[in-house]
Amino acid sequence: MAYPVDLHTHSLRSDGVHEPAELVRIAAERGVQVLAMSDHDTLAGVAEALAAGERHGVRTIASTELNTESEWGDVHVLGYFLDPHDDALEERLRWLRENRGRRIELMVENLERLGYPVLIDRVREIAQGGALGRPHLAQALFEAGHVTSYDAAFDTLISKDAPGYVARVGLTPLEAVELVRKHGGVPSLAHPFTVDGLEALLPQLVAAGLAGMECYYGSHSVSSTVEYRRLARQHDLVPTGGSDFHGRGEHGRLPGGVFVPEECVAALEARKRTTPPASIPA
Ligand code: AMP
Ligand code: FE
Ligand code: FE
Ligand code: ZN
Image (cartoon, rainbow, N blue to C red; front, side):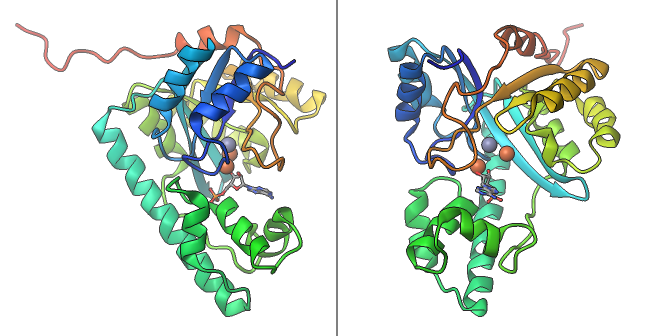
């Protein structure tokens, strides 16, 4: 059996491999009771996940993961309790997805020059309409026989230090936190070990509205969880966590595969800010 709360998972709407309803079903079968489907730069699967959640008795939380890349390393911001019908938010997410697409096209061009040709159409086919990302490219590289495994594609060709890599264009870490807050969501910092200079950045993120930090994550050791919990307490952040399940058996655990304290869901929800009415009648 799994732990009952999982606040970080991915479906086919971004770089996971399962349809949203299938992801919810898998989570439900494992005993997950509260699930956040946090696809990168999209809320496209939320309606399907919510409906599946009702069928399976899983409370499903609308969320997204905004990946940023800057001098702070990889700062990924999870945004919870967002509204998939918020058109202004969707416009910003669409811009991020377009940037994702262009970045992958540039990587495909790079790889071609390096002697590892793949078809961009095949990469898009693998993504099945989901927000494009390096996992789709990794699969295409594996299929084309350029690498011996999906992981090897990252290790040798498309990880940050590898020759095929192209940097992301998008939001800064502060902008990601602000975007979530502007649209009524609750931001939490994902897998803090990928941040360079965490202790220097945290006060800035907190000032921008950060409400949580992923203290519970599959690859954290007990001592790093303790350290992240200390930092969370110091900055008054809700300790969150999740599996980061994508479905390929790569990095990330199975849904509910990481202990996350049940009380963190209510604590996160309590960090929602009610926006004041636009105009107060005289
Ligand atoms: P992108 O957003 O296109 O930069 O892709 C980032 C995604 O790639 C992450 O969300 C993970 O799903 C995956 N990823 C990143 N690094 C690795 C790695 N070393 N091995 C496997 N998957 C990875
Ligand atoms: Fe991912
Ligand atoms: Fe991430
Ligand atoms: Zn993720």
